[in-house]
Image (cartoon, rainbow, N blue to C red; front, side, top):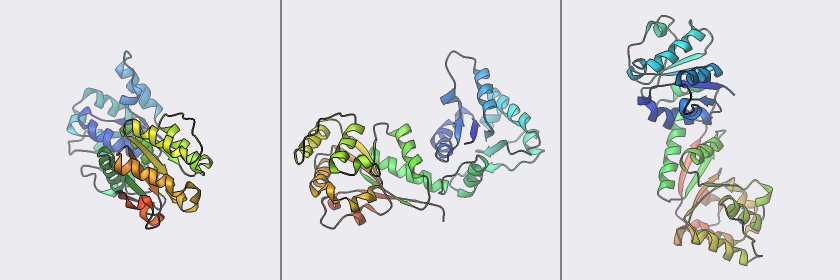
Length: 302
């Protein structure tokens, strides 16, 4: 895992935190950055230097604001000193906005990545490669998928994330939970404990913070309905949902209960990850086939 120190101006903070850092982390890089690493009451410059010295990559987000900041210039000078002729690939200049560059960035003539328009996949691909990170998908597409999922979940709308190819979808869910939806419970249908209906219900309730004594079937669904229905609206991510095809033991009543909580009571929002589209996994007359669920496709690089 590469350790990447991100040097940036606070004026570009929204872009750095909303787009750059999530992509680097999802690609497998460890990001060393002020907002996560620096502690109150300790010297700022000392903490900057310590974080910078720990990294094996130095990522410079360049703009007029950056070059006009004494702190940023301090980090720039230290990054350049580690590899003055840019022969080792340690320092990665990223042009966020056009600006007049100092000689230390022009005379060695390093390849500068142009992300002024960050909708283009090629500069992102070069950036990830330079940071020893890999998403398995074009970065603009990955970010667009994230943003669509966020919009649906914020509106209380259930979503089917359909994954195609070898793409890092798990880190996308990790990012959504860590940064945007900490209340999102994660339930993995690949786990042995979820193979039976009772185990699945218990896993959902446990991940939502409940520790029930669950009665036997069919009264288990009454307790499930009570616990979900009496609290605030719950959000649950069900991963590897393709498993439902081979699990008739879940029973039609479980899915009817889920539909009620989602559609009628409005107490449950699902983020369903699968390889096959949601409706393709269910018979036409299945209770869940009647729910309103939005499909978002995450495509791997061909």
